[in-house]
Image 1 (cartoon, rainbow, N blue to C red):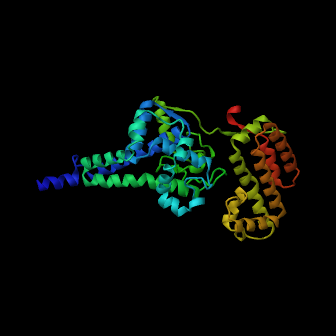
Image 2: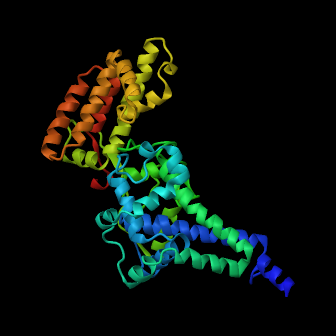
Image 3: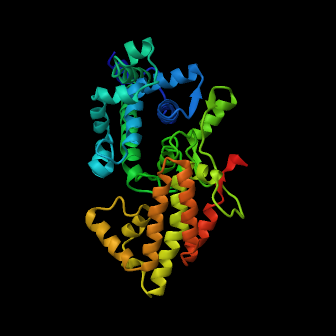
Length: 398
């Protein structure tokens, strides 16, 4: 009898080998990751893709079963993050709470936001509201992981409990901590989005493509997170697979930006492209105008880039928006002492203000004037950019 109990505690009902335990953990973890990134995030929060009702319900069940997350609550908190990003109302911004708090205790910030019914009411619209959601998933969220614990224990004994514990840590730390924390603090940026979002790695394998966080903030409703040829989004690969068998329908992907040659003045196609790709335009400006001018100024002065700390050099891409007061003052003083850089940064500010306008005709006239003045500025990089921006258009407009 005692030996039977020990055997059950050690091996459960399956007597699974080590390789089987590892495979089980990878499979259930990947199910959870896909439930979050494909269903909760890309489908429910941003409407980038629709799934067949059977697949959608599996994802909804698994999110409840493995994480205790309620669809409406998760969607509402995430939508508010986008709506109030990097402000005091952002549920989990490292700019507000600090990187240590978000990285190590991001799940607590999520729980705090869950307790505010106004968030769910305002931002959770359009999510499932059927009998199961009201009476099972939403009413007893903790019952899901509890059921998963007993199932794991029955199948694998105490090793099932260990796997369950790892599963309970994995998503809260990786999603609530790493993506929401490091994804707004460290990494590379393809697009100068209106926040501090970053891509943690160009290969989104570990958490379903969520590592491409800057790309997502640039185009939130896109079902595809990868933007550049060297980036890989495993979540998008899964969507395409489901689409191929009729289980998914892609609704939105980020449109491509095209550049026409020999365009003498901006037109309506230019304005459409700028409104759609305003973050990409500012990225192009930094790479094509600000950075080359910075290097020329330093070279002409016989100085070193290290005279301006890397943090301040990077802040030129956002006009110093995310710097503290003292650092912003220091950057402003450095720029003002260099006429070409001062001019380039002023044109950046004016271009940003143009793209914030809501009147298309006024924006078009303003852009025409901006291009004329930029081409007469005498700064080669600025002149070339002004000539190029006139030819911007959405690729599908061809």
